[in-house]
Amino acid sequence: MSVPGDLLNRTVLRQLAGNKAFQRGERVFADGRVHQLRFGPDRAVARVQGASRAYRVKIWRSRGDLQFTCECPVGREHVLCKHGVAVGLAWLREQDSPQQSGEASEEDEAVLESVAEAHSHGGTSHGQSTAQETAEPAVAPAELRAYVQSLDKKRLLSLALEAIDYDEILRRRLMLETIGAPQGRLLGEAELKVYRQLLREAIEVNDFVDYDAMPDYVQGIEEALRPLEALLESGQAAAVIELCELALLELERASAATDSSDGSLNGIYDELQRLHHAACLDARPDPAALAARLLEYELEGGLGIFNNAVNTYADVLGPRGLAAYGQLLQDAWNRLPPLRPAKIESDTATSPPLPSRSKSKREAEDNSLDYRRFQLTALVERFAQNSGADVDTRVAIRARDLSSPQDFTAIVQLYRDAGRYESALEWAQTGLSHFPEAQDSSGLREQLIELNTLLGRHEAVATLVWEEFVTRPDAALFRRLKTSVTGEAWALWRERALAHVRQSLADPGKSRARDASALVEILLADGDAAGAFAAAKTGGCRIDLWLEIAANRENGHPAEALEIYRQQLDVMVARGDSRSYQQAAGLLRKIRHLYHRLNRGTEFGAYRETVRATHRHRRGWVKLLDALTRI
Image (cartoon, rainbow, N blue to C red; front, side, top):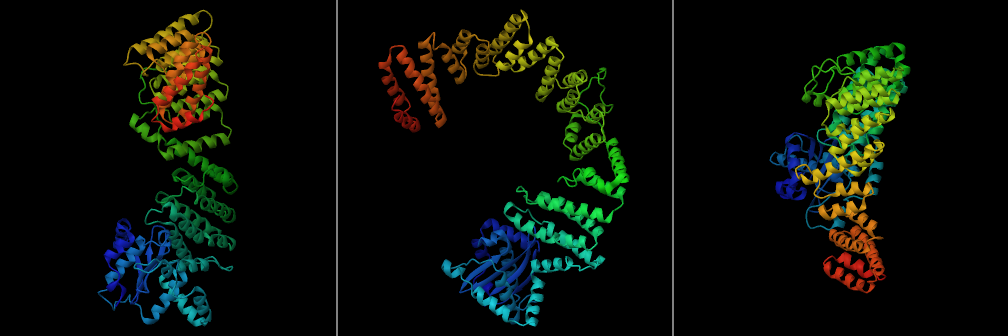
């Protein structure tokens, strides 16, 4: 009786593979991806088309148990994979038709056994056999090798030819070796057609290639590309150009379905582009036609294929090709619609002028993310730099897209680098006028502040810093405001700044914080320790500011400093992490020091025990506290 009749059924397959793999195997089977199924009374071998390549699968009976193997990464871990499930389902389908064309003869069974065992990576059993019994092959590898070596040439040839019929990996490898050994002859169109198909088969994917499957996928591609070097050496450079471009385009299509996060495909990209360039040097294709293809690859390819081609292929393109490349690039650039800010006042005569056409905000956002637009802009900028274009030409390129504050910031930087501060200032002001509320326009304000500082316009700097301070009052901007205002005017600006922060605290709807941290930090930065202490007592503040206040009061008011440190130690311990415990331990040393300064040293022991009892549920803190024998 055959295996499907007494040992293999759908329930067994589901138990061995698990629900998820079983369901995937059902889809593989339903999609018709099981090919060249050959089966005998107690074994079956088939080729299953996987995501990146075809896998050989074998299922067989050994010592009363079911075993299986597959060349995929999951199958190599001795787990029934989706490919094995698909073959099992295909075998079950045949059990009601025992004499169908797929059934193997007695001689076929010997071939199946020999080839399967020769390629086997191990199997997994289903039943009560031990692990040692399961792992032990029916025939020892040394015996099998000796048997194969004893066969005559005719028998070996017969086995090899038969294996080619159902072993896809062996078939592809032999075909690639045949193509890669031209021995001075040129391949005809029929052979090149076969090679094109082999390249596609090696690269295309039918399912997602995950991280674990990438080594097999990459190895298959490398084997498929190996003949290219021999073709180039044999004088078929034109064919190599075509095949390299074909492979790169197929890789582009497959990239979305592969996890190449380990960079394993980068070497393949580099090798294909190296061969392509070498083949172009040999074949000398039409420069204008090559320039057109290279530009299109740069604009459309998401993998950076042929990046910087105008420089890499300059020795191939020559003056004619470079001129054609430049003209094609300019034509594409001229067709690119300008993007403007979403809202521009129609009666505003800004300087510098903005492009004449605009799009809606939605269109601007969509186009700003467009890869082709990004690539085209980068190529035009690079071409301009290579040709020694002046800053105004480069600004005109950048000004094609003014849909975000960053676009204006880039132009400002170009003029700043060129030392043209007035032009940079104009662009920064124009950009800020169109994006006054945008959160990401702070870069433009920063540029304006620096430019006005360079130009010695202190009043303008103070105004700009104040605008920033109003939106996010903090100590850094307070100090910057102080340095931008000279003389007696600072007193007025100071009161204005403090009044603004206090007003924000008084209005919960406008306050950006739950306490007075901003005011306390500003007062500390201004050197007003007493004012900072008063503000902290009234509105509260961050723990780091409390510690700074306490440090300022240690000399003149040690009792107040002690009380602050005691309160903040409890806050630190309550955080419950090891770093806070270490900080609390350091604070405990300061507390002990202050107790002794205040001639209250005898009280410290009782305080320490109070701290231990209060936080006794925090084992990490108690353990650290007990270890601090010197405190």
